[in-house]
Picture: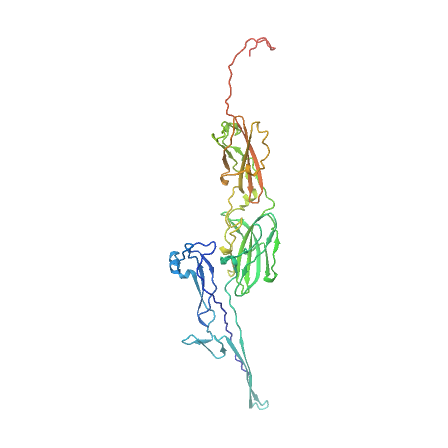
Amino acid sequence: MAMLRLSLLYVSISFFTFSVSIDECGPGLNFCDLSMHLIWTKCALPCDGIRKRETLMCCQQTKLKALNRPDCLQMCNKTLKDIIEERPCAQRCDHGTYDIKKICHCQPGYGGQCCEIATVNSGGFAKLRDINTGAHYSTSTYIGQESKKVMVFHFDFEPANHCSEKKNTCFYEPINIGPDITKQKLHISWDGWTDELAGIFRYNWEIHHLRADARGNLTEVSPMEPFHSKAMVKEEYKPFTYTPPGPGIYSIILDVADKANNSRFARQFVLYDPVSNITTDETFKLYVSSAERETHYNWQSNVQNQMLIGPSLSVSWKGHFRNKFHEDNQLLNSINSFHGTAIDGMYHKDVDNELDDMSGKRTRKAIPNIHGNVLFEIAYAVDHQGGKTITEIPTAISSWKKVDNLLHENQTIDVKRSDGDTVRIWVRSTDIMGNVKEDSTVVHIDTTPPTISAVKIETNVNSTKFDFASR
């Protein structure tokens, strides 16, 4: 009967050390802000212990004064637990016992500093019997070989990092798509990603069409089901172009996975719209609201002299200009954070705030607008010929002035004018895509009251076909 003794394998883990830096305030950091993580310490003991990681904190109140750590923590209402993270070491003495000095003594069949070496011995014996009598007459012993095998597994629980998170010089965005408000195809690329332990293995990028939820916030309707995605190993990556299937607002999500399958997600938004335009709604008029209502706002009965003494003109265009596609689809509203979980609850997709889209024109923040318009400008011209000479839209940049409040859709302007003048006022609307629409209205100035002459009746005038007529 052959006998074989087998032993299980154990895992040893490699760790890295770091040198502690003083707490400094980097660009964009304020007092009490947390900044970059330092790398994990080594385990305190070969086969046991705790490893730690420190987060730097800005403790500099002024350019000349930096607080010591205890005072800084107290003033910032924080404790050491807020800046020092601890985790147990994964390497342990599972196939042995500790002595008083925490040295691991191995069980039979195991070796190594932490009993991570498994020993396998082959061999055995054979009992020989006479096939005729069945009597045992000899035992043969076989001495086999002893084999030792060490397998080292590197456990990596930390996902990749982007250089923008370290608060130092970084020339790359987590995802770069070119202009984030565009009528052209997207040029997608990324750089600045690193993974200190396992190393980056693959990238997966996906694109979602954002829709407004019940509260009006834009969101990915199905976070786990993008309408387009593509995975590539690190060596296959190169910048590429992509044209969205239609106008709308999209999110591009990049999944950076290391060789231990830890994932980190970043997100970028783009408003793609090569088709929509601004239109005017004639049910909502552009008119001079300071003019006389009885004249259908065509005449105003006051003037303003060269010293700007006299009433101003008020212009209103509420609801007159619209980008209906942007307004109906709420494309300029705020955008929700991104969180996705698979049906089985085992896979999560979350975009951290520091890797979400917080820069550029189309970020998570809402873009101020009214009916899809993001800018209104106003211009005017005056003549004394009933408006015949002021029909052309002004082309000089200096002629146009930005209105005081976009959302009010009205403006009060000072216009030097005299009795008998005609004033033409143009309003120009611009949407987020750069589309422009102008419209104008006219008001006539008349401060002279009607003249009534004396009434005289002539009787029995015979210059008409009637014999007796008066005039």
